[in-house]
Image 1 (spheres, rainbow, N blue to C red):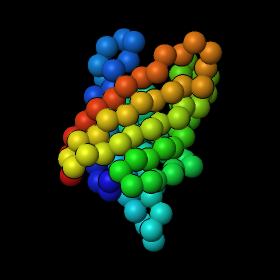
Image 2: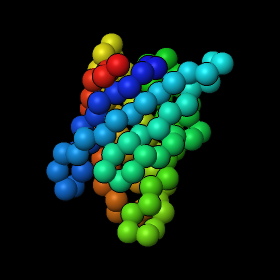
Image 3: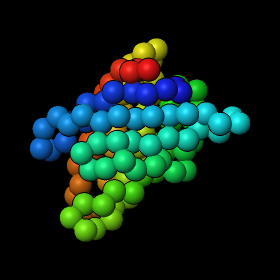
Length: 100
């Protein structure tokens, strides 16, 4: 799971590129996501086998939103969802490949 992942995020506004970086330090996984919305750290990362879950805080138009990121790796591929904690916000899917 460690490494840099080139993601394609399927937003309601079309596909958007993003880069997910995951790194293991002393057994603990840390990471961040870089996209057109900025570079934000992942927090509360929970890893189980080929799956991970994390929380991220995004600032959009001056408001901060929390989102839950769930991902799954299969070799050099990753798929997952982003669930923004906001009423009626759609589930956002993403997919990608290991970049480094």
